[in-house]
Image (cartoon, rainbow over all chains, first blue to last red; front, side, top):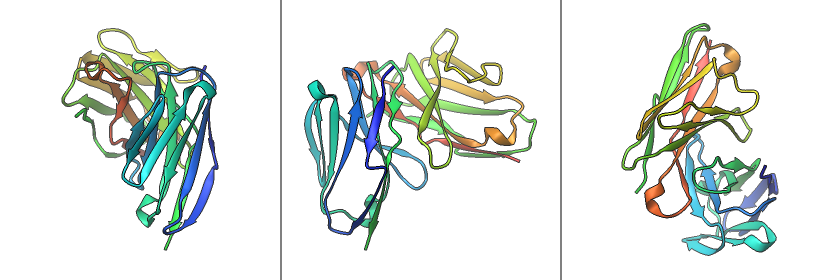
Length: 109
Length: 117
């Protein structure tokens, strides 16, 4: 089955700093999603990005499908960006997502 | 949009009781829903795939007689934890695929936190 690995496992940033989170996946996928899990546990869908580049405000993501990795960029980080960021992949929308172990981000003022 | 709800958000129960968790797709029909479990400081692990009108497919190590899944309609899947024990305490999250959107993305419910005393 698909394997998903995320790095780094933990990251501490000063407010205002930029960061890059990485996700490697083992097989060709048609679904790759980035999530932010807030302190209450809810998964916030950041990007659906099986390939290409997308941007949403201070966040952007790039997936290079041929090389089986995806990057999540956070610019000008804020304390509200703290939490766990998950990458998850699946063969298609109606097959289960496989989650990486997450990157725990702490942004300090 | 594509909204998935879960009910209840929180449940505390005594050991030995059964707990039912509902997952609903509010504005789309979902032939397939998924149930995940997350223990503290860990990632989400798939428990089962719920297919409308047929039996659920369980992951290895997940007891199908303990975690009963019913997907009786295109907008509702239920997970019943039977004879719950403290080790079943966890965060349960469902997701659904919206085939009508033309993309492969899945949408997640807000989760249900179960505490078994």
